[in-house]
Image 1: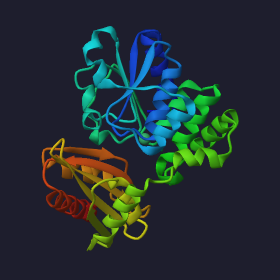
Image 2: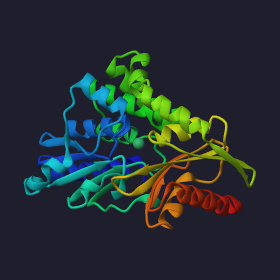
Image 3: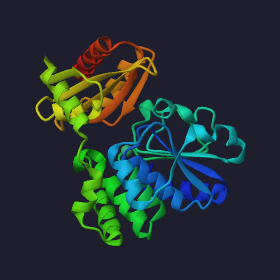
Image 4: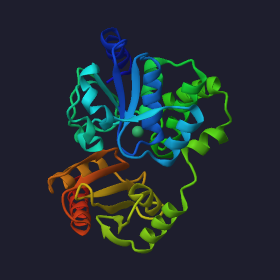
Length: 319
Ligand SMILES: [Mn+2]
């Protein structure tokens, strides 16, 4: 979808729902991209609140504190659903990423993930899978002038998009414009975009690295491992050396395995497709971006990792 048509869709959304009571919802374990895009959308919706479910990530928490952003828990509003016109979902289009939205009316979705993992439908859909971040989409939809909104969106753009590996000219133009209004040093924005991991996260990632195994699949080094937390960060760390990494974490609450998948720039197999196919074969679902994806598998960790390698092997033969 082009920028112009997305701007038109958003204008029509504002015309119809701009003054209605709306909850702007992010995916679970909200990162700064999800949070900053929700905050920015909420800034043009006077009767909106920002909601999420589960805890937010490190950087998102810090950003809320810095900008005094109030984030509510969506399940708390379940019984007041009728008082809302509906919700906007940002930075995802998949129910597995925010199960609490299942019974809500979705008015609008703003997302930059690949369509393969998307199962939500909305009256107004704003998609751009070429955008490295949701924050970049939102910045161009609303063209913000407030300092704190520009600060948040700058952080979102710096954080997402795999350290500008998937950036485009527009990314830098947008970021430059936002940073000028935010009037904050790059170092400060970076400290929110890339917060220092907590000691327990570092320990989990190190232990995950020490347990990793690698196999050679159709000219690619593929690393796998298990962890008790931070599966995406651990997968990122593994791809400092491996071409592809799959890291599995058992989620007791949902009785499923969450897998974080990462790939180096030279890998031509899209990780979002690997995750989508592999997770689906277990009754789960997955998706994301070509170089950074994830999935929820309805099986145990070892089986999930085997599915990932099997699917990667199949796709790497043809792509
Ligand atoms: Mn994002």
